[in-house]
Length: 57
Figure 1 (cartoon, one colour):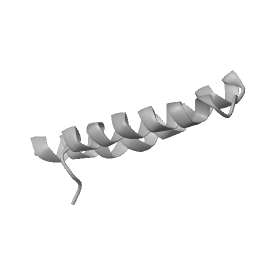
Figure 2 (cartoon, rainbow, N blue to C red):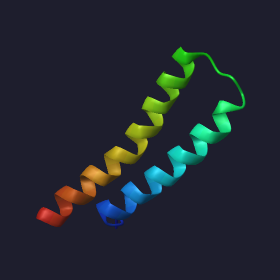
Figure 3 (tube, one colour):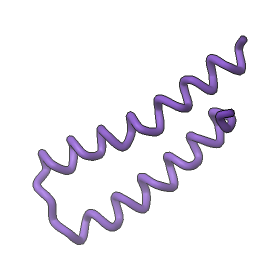
Figure 4 (tube, rainbow, N blue to C red):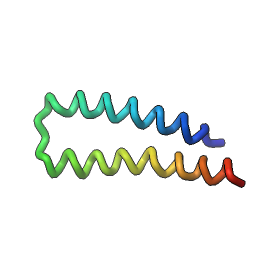
């Protein structure tokens, strides 16, 4: 069972805020940061989308 899509979005926001804060101090290249952040966003968006589809069924 997936959690509600709203819960996944809450986790996404919290995780990305922490990741952004921690990553700032490491001075990554802009390309790396954008690419990695995209992977992280997709990792949360996929289950949120599945949960939304399941809720509509």
